[in-house]
Length: 307
Image (tube, rainbow, N blue to C red; front, top):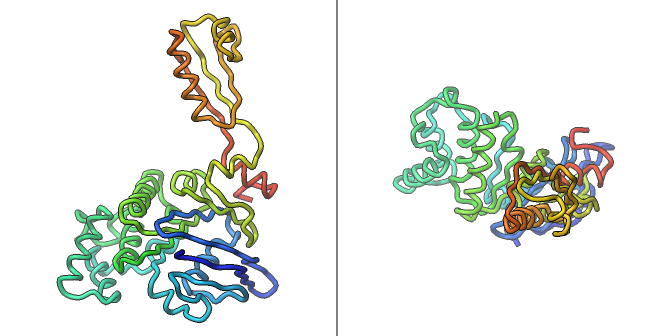
């Protein structure tokens, strides 16, 4: 268990930011911390990195006591903050920035050169290695920030809102890169986000935070089941008499529109496509409306993520 903590509490004056957090993370996992601004995500990350001491509770990160040995934790984890430019020197090229941080991490000589080469390749910045940071895109600077965190080859990487302030394409590339780092390099990643689709796309397990508490935990599918509402499939079928579709067990109107309500959208959609093909028809259009993580959050808290 890379992270095993219980009862973490943190307050600033009268404001409680973390209120009894229990958390376990296994090696190789990609865990999402989902919640609105002010939910306690960043504070939790800072505590787990050894940057903040909890007021109560404790446990271990990478086997080191979070309260008694925070410096040991800090030296063995990597943290990428929301602002990509933090830690980037605009007077150094992309490669020189990585060279500098490699020295900070204790890498020397050929080992340093080889590691910088490997990380540049991994984050797809080799062609930009001689560029100045202010002359590359925000998405590339974010990849540079993540590259710094990978230089030390730590087993545990914290990403705090990694796609914030990026355009659509830059954010998409960061998500793909984060997925590759987790799956291909085996790095355990703890990701904070307030974007529902981002958590669902990247994370096998999600913790939902609200006002300093974990209000739900599970896979995206498990969380959606909490809502207790079915999704909906609507397809327009051509080449088949509506009576044949009704005989096959489908709700179909005279215009050939089939409607299915289900909690298993993907499976039922595949089943519908296969059945229509077997009957000799074709799907002209298909739309699905399923329960979302936004629905889950509203179900649990009575408000949206932007509230």
